[in-house]
Image (cartoon, rainbow, N blue to C red; front, side, top):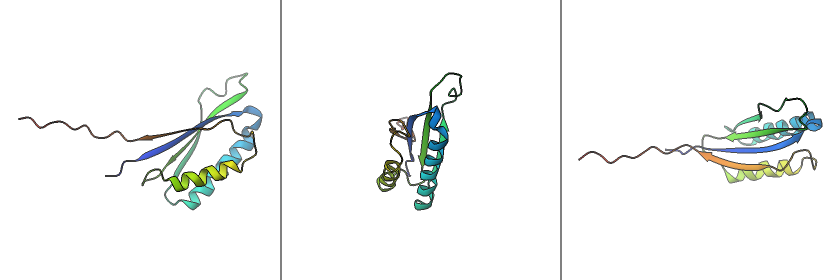
Length: 109
């Protein structure tokens, strides 16, 4: 049984850079999908980011693949992100999550 793992990357984007940042991140995601068949991607933003007066938004990139997280495509992702203009995205925080394993119970005696 394959243990599915997902990659979540979150960071802040300054409000005045939203359009440029979105185009850049979606370009990276499209490029990665072309290079990694079966890769599923999403770009999300924190639901309260449109409140008046906020100077930044919190975004999250989500990456999932039927075979799980592959270090080779993670390296490709990092290389493409490194090519983006400095300061476009805030500090990126990466976390991986996996499916919960089935609970194992001792058979009754």
